[in-house]
Amino acid sequence: MNNYRSHSEVINAIINQYVRDFEDQNPARSKKNLVNVFASIPYQDNFWKENLKEYKRLLEGIGLEVNILFGPFSGGVKEWQTIPSANFNILVSPWYGEPVVENLKNLYDQPYYKFGYVPIGGNETTKFLKGVLEFAKENGAEIDEKKANEFIYREESAFYEEIDNLTTFITEFRYGLPGHVHIIGDSGYVIGLSKFLLLETGIIPKEQYIVDNTPKKYQQEIADELANISEKRDIPVSFDPDAGKAQKEILALDHSRRGLIIGSGWDRDLAKKTNSDFVAAFHPIQYRLTLSTNWVGYTGGLHVIEDIYNTVLSSYQ
Image 1 (tube, rainbow, N blue to C red):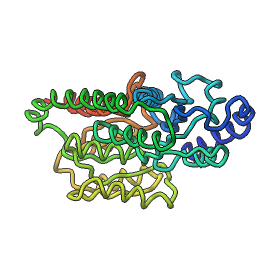
Image 2: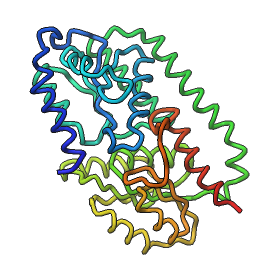
Image 3: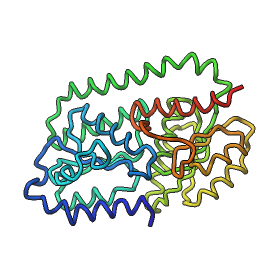
Image 4: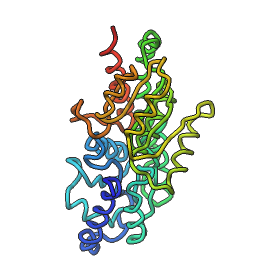
């Protein structure tokens, strides 16, 4: 048992023992535009509060009402009481949280839209929102599709405008940027970051290490998702909750080229030993304070770039 599994058990216990008492006031699927979102796990995900805030903002931007359930931007217990009345659920995860949406499907016949990794940056956030939009239409939500697509276009355009503004800097500073990345983290971030870094920044994902104790039945699907990022790049992945083994494997690799490690606070010394740049993203995380930073969505992609490039610039001489 770990936080990823126990989080689902706690949510299901609350639904079964508390939320069900309010079914009469909140008939199943009675609000066609309301959705329940199950995504970043509070405190397990270092960016959870701002991530959930951003999911809520993006989904409201395409015309949905959103039960985000956790954090300062939720409606608290009153919001939990309305879970049955949601038209459908959104799961952003490769596996953790799936027992919750399956439970709600059994209880209230609520279908769910699953997006199997954290959407970061332009490509994947647009893919996520358009997937939700199509699912909402299929399930009878009353969405103004024109306005929804205009919102997506504005958000995507703002993201790529910032990327365009970075072009000169990236071109001139290319020799000083890391060429590849190793990520030691949970499966949702490993997939999402690998897609974003390869396709939108040009940093190549090398060996990736998933340490969330992913159940075996999901491992091949995750490996396939990584394999399908690019036909030209093979992205090996290992599944082992022992991050120490990942460190030993990375130490044994060739470090003649400048690399990047995204991991927990325990991986800072590994980055020093391998002459790699380091971004602390996962718990335990002793070396950064996160108050208003998200790593989700269009703005999340920009924050990831800021974190990486600020680390590089701080070591530049």
